Amino acid sequence: MKRVHTKSPEETREFAAELARGLGAGAVLILVGDFGSGKTTFVQGLAAGLGVPELTAVCSPTFVMMNVYRGGRLPLFHMDATRFDDPREVFGLGWEEGEKGVTAVEWGEKVAGWIGRGHLRVEFQVVGETERQIRVIRGRKSFARKG
Image 1 (spheres, rainbow, N blue to C red):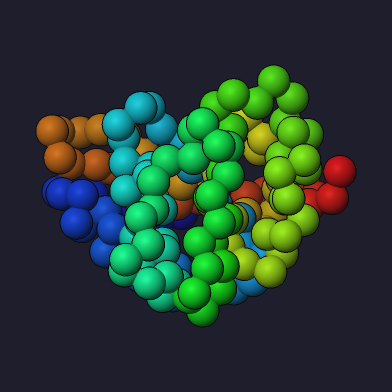
Image 2: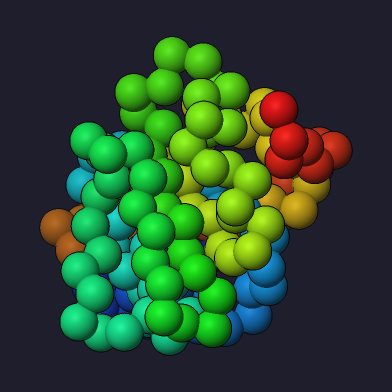
């Protein structure tokens, strides 16, 4: 487990960019935290660390459920599981494509039962107006990407 305290959105993005530089194809990050806790800001940092062009707007996929950002070292698949009624819905979004890049799932606790070892659980806690406590924990269950 790794624990980081960031004092600004910029520091959150920098931490995520550093983490992204060490990720390989097939990496899955389950992002857990309240609204406004920094999940999308973190994904912006992942995109930067993967080399996604700066002009690409990285935003929450709440309404479209998945955004794909290309042009970097690996594609970034950014999902939002908020509206999933059944965790298997990720498979209808092109989940299998994630094996070619890095997948970050906001509200990922809703699908965590379908993914296990091989994923990173990233937990966000608000500790101040711009400060966040971020914990990165390696998954412990067996990995299952296919439905």
